[in-house]
Image (cartoon, rainbow, N blue to C red; front, side, top):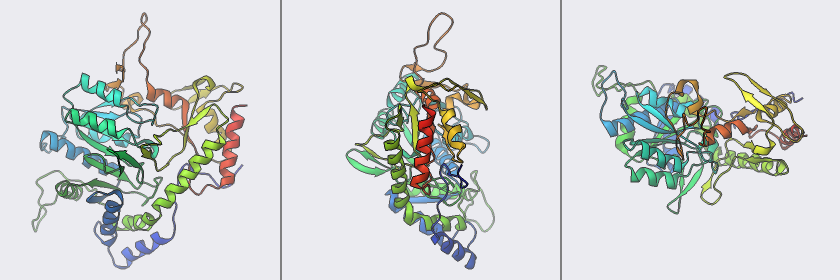
Length: 422
């Protein structure tokens, strides 16, 4: 048993972070303005290739204001007691963290979940096209890039353009990932109409918290910056003409991020090496790594994941908080593997549970490439709809992907996984 925990993905500090935090304290710029904030907004915008970046308190804050702004662009300014999406449906990625989706609820919208596809584990373009057939009035799509792997953005953008829909791009997990769009490599976070990234403690680089809104529109950047500072007007007293939020990033948090940015490409290389070692070490098992389009995308490999082949799945059931599994020779299950690696003090995690399966969203519409993904069976008719997201959740798991994990520690994890299939 390892005495030092092997984390799923923990912060990796280099020492430069302390310099910029100390400078913020020394100069007394410890609030939501300062040189660190200015520097990282410029540096991230340059790295991603967009014109403007607005530093915010969290990736969730960036997603909220991106979603709110999209709603206002589409449907006009809302009253103070209502959201900009009130009465409107929004197409959303299904397999993602709920921070992608909750802003739709914040803005009084109605999320419609679009099933996943097996090629990248992201939003299925066929299901999205089917969703527009069912709900042609929808004008907003929220797309997340799962575990740092870009979705099929060429097809998704073409579908959205055809239907006159805007895109909120959730690149919280994919900073540094690239996608070939119209033959040109583009950074994720610069593909949608409104874009968000995260610096949460487990991300590819971190400020312990924090996020950013990314855009090529000065008007949009100025609006988000205004909203994030309580929508204060240019008056000598506190004057407010719009609802605002306390979402601006601290200059101290920005100092940590400023020290992390120079190491982004190094972290990506380390994460890629972890993925490739798993891929090689597990090649003889009935499993596959989380996939990506090797021709048209370059993930940041934030989390390495695996999925067990259908014929190699041992029995496993999950409730809302508990689970049961049974070992069978030559087979295994995600929960068996997670328990096994936990026994050597290593942290894994189930795949994100699809949003359409979450208790809070179980009454929301869910669309597969066949159409309506709910209520397709009864006592007399067998259901034919394939729920890809639920299937990936059932058979998949996130492996320890910490870039401080040694080769020997990773080899031990690979050995443990092999034992689960004996």
